[in-house]
Image (cartoon, rainbow, N blue to C red; front, side, top):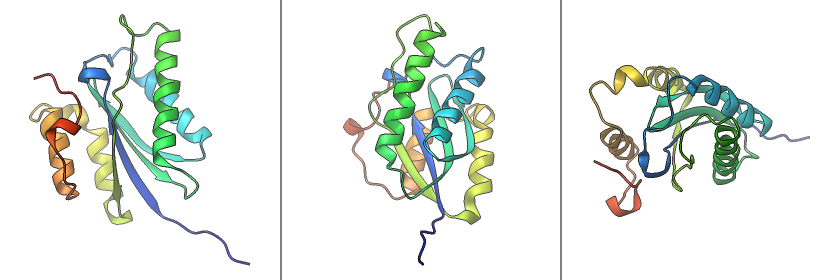
Length: 153
């Protein structure tokens, strides 16, 4: 009998609408726990989650039954609803439409976990825009500025 074997590590990066700094430190841990639950309900394994007020990073072990677009849609819908129902944000919270999904080999997973978990330190010297451009270049992803997040400088 044959079986399916996989080893897929994916980092997701996405932002609130217009990259607004809406994810407040007072409730970000609650949000991260909630998103972890959504990811686990989809059969995925959370490895790291963290971010800044204007974006979030999620590193997970992706099962081959997962489609990234559907997973991100589910995470965004559920977490937006969670934020609104719990009145965590003073304005209507929405995520931007786009997202980044980047794959890593097992040998890089611990470095990516460290990177995700040290977001606050990392962003003392680098903006989200510069960080995101760097990730795109590192993964040799061709892009045009007009198709990226709606940045407010």
